[in-house]
Length: 87
Image (cartoon, rainbow, N blue to C red; front, top):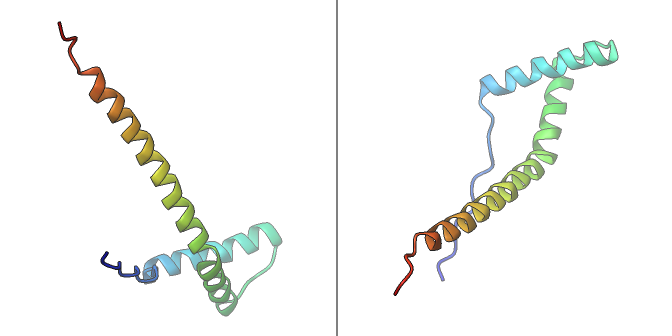
């Protein structure tokens, strides 16, 4: 059996990183009433990207697999519903 290549780590674009940094800054200001500097924003984003992203990604894969399995079950029953009664 041929081995599969590992997918490269997901990378956020500069636009995505900047938007998320702005959201982190706004969150801290609204929720905690605190200003947060750029270095802290970057550190928080890096932490969440490293720790949470794989968990969320794997959960999304599991959800997609369940959805696909359900669609395949539906296709199987739809297939047999097309059968004609034989004399």
